[in-house]
Length: 498
Image (cartoon, rainbow, N blue to C red; front, side, top):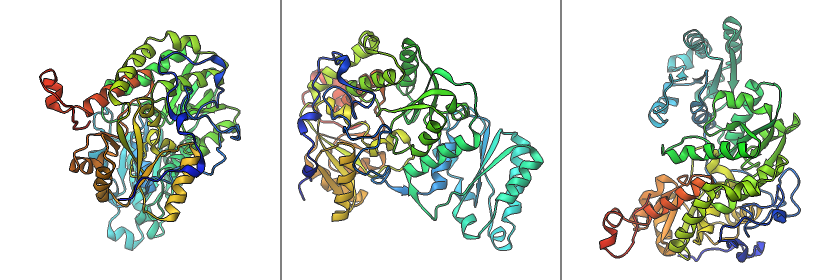
């Protein structure tokens, strides 16, 4: 087994990744600007001084280049099906393109199902009746549901037979007065997950966005954990509540949050804010260009994971809006609780070895796509873990160059190991001698195979309350069920996972 690779040629000083203010004191007011820190402001790597005002790093980075490509129709459907609102989605393909979604989408949502299929048959494809079938489906949806808009998604089948859906869309739109938007998605030309997310949000804004009076104190959040996602816990909504609370103390208001937890009102109302904070501009480049072209201010602030990164998030947001939040954060009770929880967790985990997996996730979750899946890195570094990256990639010179270029663009200098495919991960984990692994959920079997406790990627919530909950998640992951129940009578702490 090869030793982990280090990106030494990029020269990031490892000492800069240590938390230099573990006491929890707020940093000096003058230590950072809106662009002041990539992963936080307590001694973590700053943005490069050569970075443009738009937030583009000097090293070239293509969002999603490390993750898995996928079907654009699937990505659109995943994202659109989660949006609450009076819209409908029609899949212009065979029934199997959409029939899995009622099973895999959250079924706790209390609203009528709004995804429909044209259910093209072989006869439709051969006889040239696909467009008429589409028109019939659109009429049925328009009449029965009366949605505000219908988005029609293309598929491999509609692409292969050369169907032209636009005349049918225009005809039914004229008949019913309901806005119908054709989106030429397909599985025949896979795109990265980041490209699909950017295309989807651009489509919603350009086709359904509304102008209105701009709120000078309104703030948009784009690409953060602002929804109640799987797993369904109170902590998943805590970040949105925390943001609303702290923005109010700064004299600001949350105007819209997307994509996570967004309603259609969030999407259509994005242009009405004065400021948009985005977790990763490389993922949302087209959306940010559209908002900025209308005169809206923006600031790129990575995910608030851990105390340092959460401090950086709120201070950067306040500074971009012309406020100073230092005293507000210092007095915030949620921050004080997070400092105590982090101190305790650091005593448990400092110096322990952790494998952080990237390059495998395939779920179109923008908060997990941000920073190529490394958005949780500040939290884990803050707790003192010694981290190796385990990356799904073939061990080729081109692969190393691409990975190192992307990591350097994000100021990440950590050892990394490659595994060519999911089934090959277990030997890599075993060779690393890790105490804990952080991986996409479908890789749990690989961790179990070598007896290493695991936390599923995406489990850590955001914000100060999220930092406290993350410490509890790690404690549960590193402590077996028996030990959690009978710990005071037993020794050792080998884990099972969370």
